[in-house]
Picture (cartoon, rainbow, N blue to C red):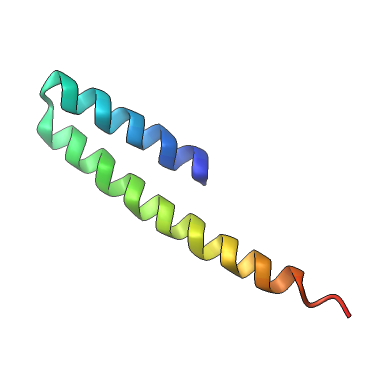
Length: 53
């Protein structure tokens, strides 16, 4: 999931440099959503991994 975020950030930067504002905005917003999903899944995996008794 973090790789997708980095990929879309790079696409957004390249599209922004080349002047494609719509594509850059869409890629940046998708990267933000993917990053927050990654954070939620990471926290959930940390919490469930600590339940070994």
